[in-house]
Length: 409
Picture 1 (spheres, rainbow, N blue to C red):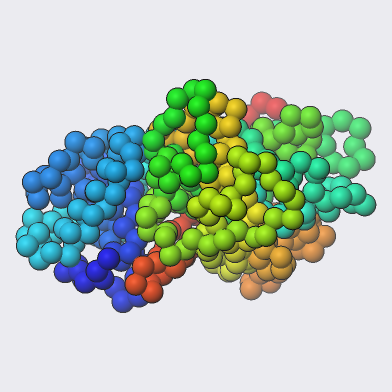
Picture 2: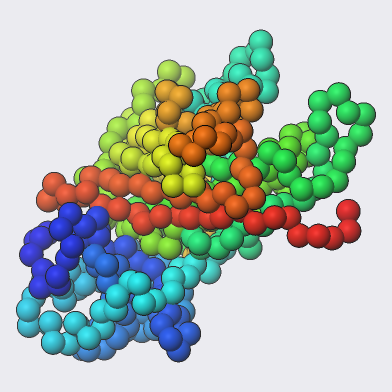
């Protein structure tokens, strides 16, 4: 891919031609449009297509879903055309008026969600939580290295970056108390994750193998899967996460296409337990990704989780999600689970960073945090290797905690 463009890009931008992530934006009229980020600009894709004489049919809607459903061949063709529009000066007069300053637009959740699944793919995170909650026993459950553990979340609570997060209420029982109490969560947490957006559907009763990952998954974004640990601890036995997770999951507004991540692909960690054939990626295209995440709390970096160390890849997660014949729908979304590394400063949740409240974090202003307080703001960012030796960015997923709403308990 050529790195030469007629667009005036900021030096060192993470959003050059090697990236070109997709999103949805609106201007003063409020109408939602499909766009692509180029530096600190947003290109109105449908308008650019019309101006260059290209087919804009898949780009006219208020979400990415029509484009997602069109499949890999259409995604590749659009990326190729888009690169041509931004590099060939013959297109400049037609395309340049369709570029809008990022600061002048409003960004929205870029797709209409189908199902939402959250996984548990980091061995370091799973081992840390096992040590916290099951001391004196094996930190990993017996099935953890045999299959990607996951649960179905609440798709309706997926929100775009910048949406405030209201502190959830529910039942919680402190150690030693005979009965639960109702009230606001006192142990509100973050989970730094990476999400994957499904484009091409699959019929019920079929399976998507490891080699089908790139034909079905359109792209990648950042996720903060907010978690109320006290609600979660009381409710999760025997069925798993429910109200402790379903109040909000924040997504970054830009979907980085898989084609932009070819240079970020890497082998996953060595597995020390044999895998059943449908999960064995030894001879399949490997989809470990070398993404570097950063978590900031109230403007101070508190963690740098490495995504490359996750035990289970997104391709394995998709294969497992469909191995029983469950269908894929356009707009289905799944997340990696908390990204945590081997060192304390690489843990992707406060419950690990503050070790369940035993070792509170000290922030530069002298305050400490075991869990989130009202008014706290969390920002997760990430970069990855891109083409031509560049690095590409994912934007940010940002959220501020608002007090719990009053209501009947």
